[in-house]
Image (cartoon, rainbow, N blue to C red; front, side, top):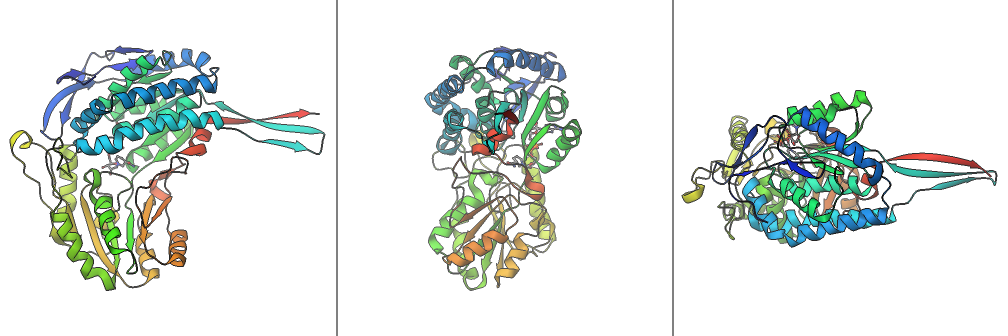
Length: 485
Ligand code: TXE
């Protein structure tokens, strides 16, 4: 099921693939070539309204479907994603610019896991009872909310899209979902998979288009009673300003500027290998990447020497090639934003140790959007380059002397998503983890993910938690029933 070039993507509403009400389409670019290769619906509030009507009708039966039956369909979707892994990985790589090898190894397998995980979690999701001294019994029902909105970003398209949709459906809700207009293709392929899996009409509706048009129509629709959003902090603020006064449930997974704290007593080689990934994987376009690297003074020079050498060895190339480590940046605008921050770093006194330029490729990628992996030193912890999210293959490095000092640096930004700490001292690992202002801490590791764990951040990195029972509680309403015995 691979997509021919110049595909016209359709909306998925009431179980059918349909044109947008406006009949208009937007260009969809291939980042590696800088060329238009497909088109997506330029939908608007009329398309969202049609989707809500379909969802409202479907909810009557879907909410009454047994958890076992919902589980069966979600497992069928997982099987179909798995059976189409290569086509989906190719589509993801073309659409986002990431190496196809990475899409095959991470993005698409995680989409399978998302559906598999919630297909089983829903079978074990239980609630409490509270007995009152033999004269009354309380029990808590957990019921689906109704129609929920899922809005997702371009960096891990199918991975993050399904991370919201799977639990929402498992909990018995009907969904109006909007993928990023920059990477719509695998969401379109998911529509076809859901039809094949026999998902009842209207249970999942995917409406493509622009954020301020379609995303905001979802956010402000009266009948959509919860919004699960992953994307930029600025957009998260816009969504909250509309949804909060409507008393909608809100789950916001936003930006980050995560610290990577390296103490001298760490396993140096293990740290180096992982730090290369936490700095540049997916072109640094992962909210969990660690772009602020703090190294304890005694090993700073050794780190700089080895890390810069390894960074220079990373291949920026055609995402289709096996040897490519960094693919294309997702859009020309984002490439410009990344290069803007490199020039800002220079203005703020930073020294570029490697990278900092457009990677000029040739052949089919000569007009693509690429940036060299970039390492910058010599900046103060509180300058803009170290405080603002760049979301690209750019890291800053900085020595520190004391634990107190590095905790102050780490906690100094408006964000608080994740952190990485490298040390062989167990007491210090516990001490530092407790003092970091964030939602996720990796000790001597990075991006080790157990889907049962609470996932999300604090401060301007978001509100609420995804994963495990947390997200099933988000996508249900609890109701306490008391019976006099
Ligand atoms: O996100 P946006 P973008 C960060 C990263 C990036 C910045 C912006 O710094 O540079 O966010 O990225 C939809 N109402 N992250 O532009 O704009 C939009 O259509 C409702 C971190 O991709 O937030 C898309 O589907 N929806 C993040 C989704 O929101 C709106 C991953 C995300 O788009 C909307 C990606 C509106 N007014 C970017 N405006 C992470 N935490 O992983 C846009 N959208």
